[in-house]
Each structure stands twice: as C-alpha cells, then as structure tokens.
Amino acid sequence: MSYRISDWKIIWVLGVGYSGFRLIREALRGHRGWGPAWRSPEPKARYDALIVGGGGHGLATAYYLAKNHGLTNIAVLEKGWIGGGNTGRNTTVIRSNYYYPESAALYDFSLKLYENLAQELNYNVMISQRGMITLAHSRHDLEGAHRWVGAMNANGVETRMLSVAEIKRRIPALDVSPTARYPVWGGFMQKRAGTGRHDAIAWGYARAADRLGVDIIQNCEVTGIDRGPDGAVTGVQTTRGAIATSKIGLAVSGRSTALAEMAGFRLPITTYALQAFVTEPLKPCLDVVVLSLSTGTYLSQSDKGGLVIGGGFDLYPSYAQRGNLPAARRVLAAVADQYPGFGRVRLLRQWAGAVDVVHDSSPILGTSPVEGLYLNCGWGTGGFKAIPVGGTTLAHHMATGRPHAVAAPFSLERFSTGALIDEAAASGIPH
Image 1: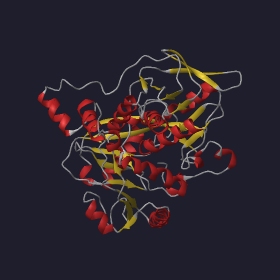
Image 2: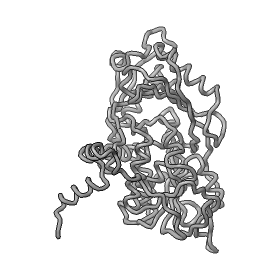
Image 3: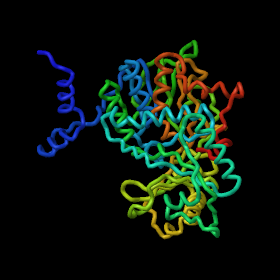
Image 4: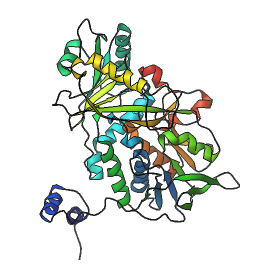
C-alpha cells in the first residue's frame, strides 16, 4: 500500500505531531493519548558525538546535527534537568541590534531562525516580535545611538531613531519630563526584536531532537574528559559511567571554564551571576522591550502580566545561581526612577544565571586546543537570543570539521591574533 506526501502529513499529525485537530481529539479522549515529549534512555557505551549541556544551545546543537547533517548516534548529557540552567534563568529577549558586521550577521542569523522556529519544531515557542526600544539619556548617548543605528542599517539590520514624543507615545509609563532623574533625549527601535518563551524553546528542541533519534540523558554530570596518547578526546567520565566518543561539544554556559580545565586548558572567561526579577501581574501596560543605556536596565511585560526586569551582572566572579542585594537594589531603583508608576509594584520572584563573560563581550565558537573538543561559550548575558545560531554553527563545525561562515570570526584564535570584536565598547553594554 502506498501513501502520498499529504497522507504522511496526516498520519504524523495524528501520531506525534501537535495540531489543533490533535488537541481537540485528545480533549475528547480525556487527554489519555499524549506520550512523553522525549525519551529517558540509559546512556550507551559509545556515541559518534556527545553534547555536554542540556540547555538551549546544547539541545539545538543536537537537533541540527541530526537534521542538517544526518548524525543520529549522539547524546546530550545534562547534569540536572533540561532547561534548568541559564535557558530557564533569563529575561527572554531576542534581538540583533549589534554594531559590528560580524556580530550583526551572527545575531540576525539567529533571529531569522527564531522567526520560523515554531513551525520547524512543531512547537509553540511563543515568539513575540513586539520590538525593542533603546533609550538615550544624554547628548553622548544620543550621538552614540546615531552611530549605532547607522552601523546597524549598513549591516542590514533595520533600525530607526525615535524622538522623545514617539517614545512617550509607545511607553506611557516612562518619565520623559525635563526634571526626570534620567532625562530622555531620544532613542532607537528594532521592530523585529522581541521575546520568546524560554522553557518552550528548550522543550521544543528537546522533543524535535528526540524524534530524530538523539539520546537526551538527564542527571548525568560530566566529571572528567578522557584523552588518548595523541591528546585527542576519547570520551568522558560521568556520574552514570564512562562514555566513549571522538567528538565532544561543550555548551555549558557558566561552567565553561570548569569543563575546559578538565580537558587541560584555560579559557579567557570570567563567570558572573546575572539577576532577573518578575513582578506581580499587571494589566497590559508595556508592549515593547525597553533598554536604558545609562542604567543598563531592561524590562518587558510577560504574557501573564508580570514585568520581567534585568540589568547588569553582579560585579564579582561566581558560579552561584543567585545574586546579591546591592545589585538587585541598583537595578530596581533605576526602574522605579524611570517608571514612577511601577515603584510600588511588588516582586514575585528573583533568580540568577551563571554567565561566562569574555574580554571583548563576544562569544567563543569553534575548535579548542584539544583535538575533537569544540566550544560554544562566552555568550555573556546574551546567550538566549543566540540559541538557534549557536546550535547551528556548533553542529556545522562538529559535522564538517570547518567553521560556519558566521561563526568563523569568533574563534578562540582571535585572542592571539588580536582580531577582537569588542561589542561592550561599541554598543555601550555587555549584553
């Protein structure tokens, strides 16, 4: 018996795919037909490739290895649970408004992948391209904003300047009066920027990778990296036993330096805690992401109504997923000063992620000093927006042995050649 392509689509939707029809069918059946979103297999003795880190970047790498390169005998090793690290501990902002051409190409590639991700993964990742406004609070900020916008438009990332009146119409809660502590001189907006649902993105990639045969192994901490007589990797030691492989991709965010030390080399990375906050639910009052250049604070309103607030990282190195009160006070005081109506809104919760910060505030992508060990790290406070491109480029390099075109400028070798991409100085913020 033969089937047409359209028949296979119907069979897939009725079987494992998500659709409106499937939702209605399962509702009528008491939702007894849903299976686990992904398997929980025991680790094999050997894989063709291992991805260490079960966050967004690790899961995306596994998915693209299977989808784009046909590798299926691969596993993702996560010491905790899927999405329990930085992927679940961020402010969900997605944007590509960077200054340098290399950065613009990298992040806009990611944004374009995000725009079609729900359809590709058959999973609602709740991308909301509500736009992002960056505020200028001084003549210096405004001059820098004009240069920034000119560079972004030259790089193919559409952005435009905004007047104070336009900003006030879009953000009524913002104090733009002449007596404001942080006076607003203007700003600019990237319309395609926005937010996504962090856990949905992790779950969507996990489910899609599992469907392609990837083993996702949770509660499996890597405790050592094995190397052969020639120095190349031969496998890993884990809390669930030894696993052999000739290729390892590291996508462990704030723990990058610890894993590199296991392999016998150091990375030019310092890890800090980055805090975020969510308030009690409010009626719709903010339909855009807002970033303040002078204070470093940024906020948006979630689908549940809470204000999602972030700022600069805590100013001391730490692997802890918690922050300190002085940093929290600095961020929240700036929000209260800029948005007087939010000053009495109560916080619901606070958390922190451990972020790995590089000297030039740009990521490290590609090979390491150890043969067979590949790097995806150094994203600082901007790793969430780069999940699709981070996974795509790491998968490409592991499968082909060559760097992806948009990732090539971000190799570890730039620290010996001096070809740094200093986005902290160019964009005025480290994220």
